[in-house]
Length: 561
Image 1 (cartoon, helix red, strand yellow):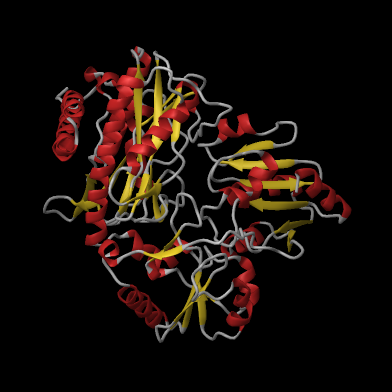
Image 2 (cartoon, rainbow, N blue to C red):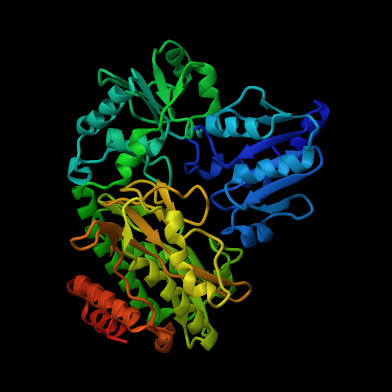
């Protein structure tokens, strides 16, 4: 398949356009490289995008993390880039209104790859456009057989039956007889099952149909799970299932064709799994100690061995150190090892073609994480290689101030990420600096490293309240195109603030900041106290796991500023 072949099909059949997503029947979830149609069509390797092809043009919608990357990877003669001003389908709607105004048009889409909520949104926004299914729509799932395994209760804290009780109570309250779970992360949480279908997200790619009696039917292909029914059985099963509900946000629109009477009810698991139970929270803490040991060992090694090392060398070394830690399963995403100008590409990924060699005088942006059976990690550190410039130090310190501003926030229950986001931008905005990505995302427990339902972002759909027990990233940044990138990311648990009704953040990540990049004169006394207290916490938690030389190095890096 190519953009040209799509355009030829549109011309031959007098069609106006086709929507192509980076998805399959698991809406807004990670996919395998061999399932990525947008990469196949455009060469864009980012983790999220939307493509719209007309008879003569092609438009690629990307968010602020990927605009520089998309410019480098796509052919400008073939593809016009559009920077999303909010959610991708909102930007698509605005573009379609400009392209077709009041004229009618017929646009193709794959009903397995667009949720019912998105289809309803587009139909409402664009009543003059006929959205028509592609011939013989496919859910585009790789045929590689995935191994499934049980996520043990010593890690999950709750059995499947205990979790199922919560869902059945919800169904009883809503007078629902049958509920279809279409999110694989939610299905994995409920069943305490995981899978190796994806490289970095150990979710079991399945649907689950729950009956009010507590029986569950699992639908999955390409798996060794012998109790699973084939996905091809969905249509016949659903059309004969009474009082059926699902979440339109994650359910492909074709499912509604299978069962036209299916009702829209929010998936209760989304919120249940976002609030971690005590066992999960303890696991997060332990996983972050081990991850802190691995990253600290790496930073010590890097300080002695950066000469002639490449970005790929760096990523491979860090992975090898994490692999030595207890309960390690995999990395939680492709490590972003970005040196110098590559650091300005927010989600840069080194390849043999663009692999830079480290040298003195610039910055290394290292965004990485791991999946441990007892928790998931995600950390970004910006590291000076050689002597940094004053410009680098000033901008690093401003990003650090931004990070601390949010990390020390105290806020009322019911506060959304949309309202908190500005706290992390204030120090940067005062210097006419900003960053084109969100400030924080939820993190799954041995699941997707990016997890809903909440975000810390200025986007209007980030209005989900933060609650005690959630785990979030805080990751402000600054990116100087063609020069360097800076981002500082820790994971935090949301906790009660002392003996008040308010909430605040507790650091989970345990890795020192780069003191060589900090300008103390730009910091307040409170910010200095935060850094010194955090560094003492890092030292106290990691000291017994390090060699003498590593410990001496860490003692210096965590000494008071």
